[in-house]
Length: 257
Image 1 (cartoon, rainbow, N blue to C red):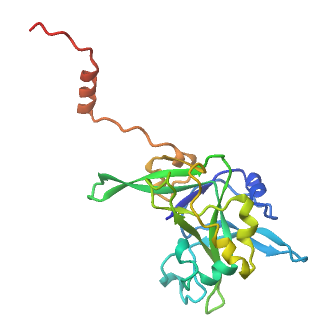
Image 2 (cartoon, one colour; image 1 turned 30 degrees about the vertical axis):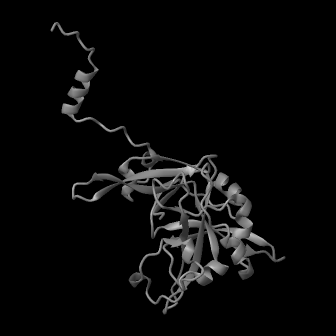
Image 3 (cartoon, rainbow, N blue to C red; image 1 turned 60 degrees about the vertical axis):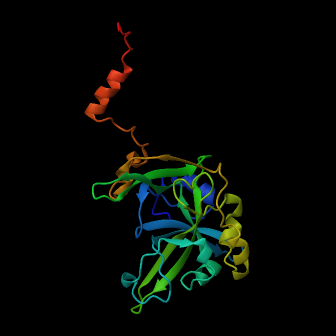
């Protein structure tokens, strides 16, 4: 599952990487959450029929076209790659409306043995980035929802796949990452290209991502500053433990008996 991510690189660097024609200027975001407007890259055709890439803002939370009222429909922020070709919610969107979520980091939570104040198993957040520092093209699908009164809303969700060997200790799922060399194949809106696009949905190689534990600030959506990505602080010893540690650190004295 991918429930939070970030876009912090300069807009022009992001534009060069994804190759869209627009020139948007946007501030860094360190804690993007579901239901918020998010940027995606999707395909269009120029007058000659060549595929072009376009920057668009959509709601993070997919809404199938058959839904009558989005408020009464469960929020879909992720779609499992294993179900894309079978579930009615995603089947047509995957064939014709694939997209790339623009990101340069995402967060996953690892459940630990310790428990919180209410006895629940505690979760610790981790930040994932590309090892080469490049942006991340996260696979997604989008849909245009039209309501009974003419309302219109474009919405999208991130496609997830199984974790790789390096990341499985943190979480059993990862957002599917599309390499820049495969953007054209992934975004091709021709329905006949769907099978080739599906083959791209696989875990990344173990050396693609770096990750480390961060502090709990990311847990609150109102926190959206660089400090969200600060590494977790080293565990602090309680006063009694600190005294024990000091005593243990003293040089041992020889015994007279």
